[in-house]
Image (cartoon, rainbow, N blue to C red):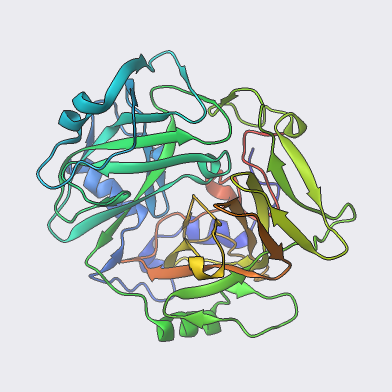
Length: 389
């Protein structure tokens, strides 16, 4: 479902090349914008047996598509140095599933699926992968592995070869097919570290988070802090959703299709403005602050230090250039995908739960996040995934 609010600056930036923007400056290091991703596709640094569509290219990332076959495996694994994922699959796979006409991935099972896209990165270009927002909001635990890697969701500089998605539906069984996109790839040239002073300077020129009562924004080298909203701002005082344990299958390619109450229990504000997270239950909540990502930068949500509690606040962490960006500086809420581990945990209103790290792009993208390109979550508040009415 497309957004209902048209933001004037979306059209302004989306219609102008980078050279016409206020700075027009390009950098040798940073996140690669959409026009550079297009160049990498044209010169076969990113290839696929199936043509890569323009719809896959986001302002600062590329949507990755599932291939023809899913492998049900006994356990999650990393290939390790010098090992190919394909060879490790022979040791761990239980059976194969044809995805060409669609198939259901069962809740709680582990699958490895070769992706359509293959990479041939330059020696100074590396990759970082996150679940798409819509996958994270369905509690689909998905991450990417590549040959020889020791880490999930990272593609080493200069990597040449196939990439694979590991998929574990944690709450709902889901139907997918060849071409379904659950992950997105962000490419970085060089390794520019985030600096606290740079984020403070950026916040002064274009507020990164909007705090309800002008409280001082907490900015450190680890990112810009945000908190959880358990007070609500609507008449019904809705503050979140808790996933039902025994709901039906969700076809991830059906948009604006499912009734929310068939899959979710609404959560309303309490007198104490707190919420007790049950162990291994899945919640959708929202940040207290609004978030803005200027066209010059991209952002990533990172889970807060476990020293504040054994809970995870997100799976999908990429925020594209232009998210929440408008001439009224109103921003958009960050939706939180919350799961408590080991013990029940009490969340309080305005409790700090995570940080956003901003990173400069090598150039302003030719298109930014927003209604102009059909982005689903611009100007959002508390919102379920695009699959629900």
